[in-house]
Length: 200
Image (cartoon, rainbow, N blue to C red; front, side, top):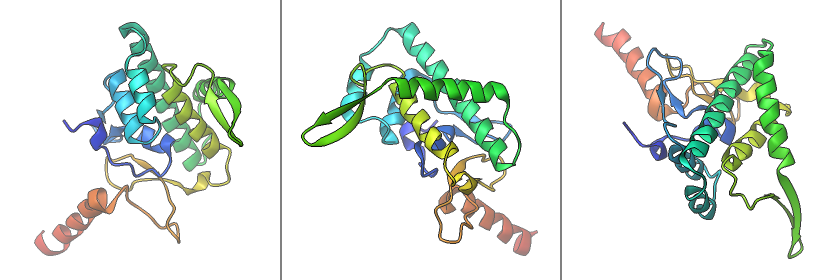
């Protein structure tokens, strides 16, 4: 099985790339790449959510039980995020339980930030030096917060590839993107059309 650091980042937003850490999500055989807390850390570094120094610090943080609990919280947030965004794409009301879960994580992420002034600039940082086991989750949650409360939520789409289920923020000029990537589902669709037209 490919490593979590081999996952393509096609969502254009950290929260969507995080949802896409499940491959073939809508197929009969989805593949979850986050099988351990270390996988979550490696994905976070791969996606630019964690800096190398944060990755090193968190790699030494917490016991096994605490790390497993942090992974469970992250996965629960990921799945609720997917359902909420999918409901929004389909103009459906999301499940209240999903909204409450996402709301709680976003509220915790906001409450954990401190504003600092250093060398003529302001910056946000987490109260305990960005080494809390939930800090990757909080950064992802703030990305989702920005998306859900923006006017651009309508630009989130789901890949048209059968069984893919990956989400992406359509930044193309005419907003006509259909696939997670042309190298993946786009090429498979081309191959299917060729087969149907010339071989069948």
